[in-house]
Image (cartoon, rainbow, N blue to C red; front, side):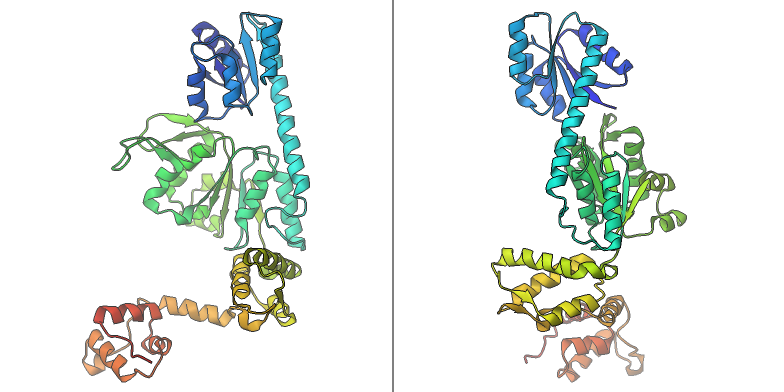
Length: 455
């Protein structure tokens, strides 16, 4: 539903216009002055402004200076050719005299909104043409990525919710950004939120905002990130991390187009396009009662599945060259290049960390390379066995050191004795023998004040 703003200091005209426009399926905001209109538009976006010319305070044409990107129709009882010309020169889309014919006004509103839609679509088309071969770092033309690109172009112009699925590091945020930039909302904001990166006790106030006094420390009103995305796109990465309570609030936003701040009894209208992403199996979470089925159905209207890097054999060298060129520029090393051995390793490697891992590996290699060639010794590639070993090491952090009951010693006494006897071992070897990680060993050394032997 298109949102319009009517600015008029006469209550009868203001209310009459509001009823007329709402009857014709428009959402209508109203203001008595330019000053009030500015305050309203600072919180909510609109597609068209109808403003009286004569207003208390600033004249109606001043709204053109505050919001040059929003089309404006100027209304006045003082019809004259000169005032019409002046308003059009200042940027008004059209001009209508009071008392006006309702049909004429509605046709004018419809025409201007269509013109604005075409302007936005033309802008998006120009952006698409200029980025045809590079969509925010999305490189590759293997069959799986061709399918991804086709689905992006199909869904981007619509307002449909999109669910992006894929392993961590496969580029889900890049897909969300591409959808936004190819949409008719590209002139507005894309607000990206990593749900896993915000503490559970803060996520509600960050998403929905809060009113002054809602809790200790809330010393002023604070709009949430959902309000910040009004008129644009909201991208929720790792949406599977949200609690069931937050999921319920989010569902209301999608169903009713309203957001209610923490500590408020009033809802605010918002117009957002939602894109969500996760590496989890949401259907499995629904079956286990960890994710709301109604929210899942709202999200899963259209999905895009990103393949892991190991399934993109034809793209691996292209991606590596892309990241290398980027690092060359950043680090002023224009001559550095991959050796043939490195390129062969890249194609054989499983890339468990996907594109993000590749980017980090190449950045480190460029830093370490003293000459113009990146060789195997500059890489930090982990084999599948090393990843499994690291995983096992992390899992043993809370396990007991080992069975020491035979010696009738406490765990601390045994640890002090063991470290003194085995000073010849490295920290890694000591941790492995004790069945703990190096981090746990370091913490225990600090607690027991057992220094490492100088080597």
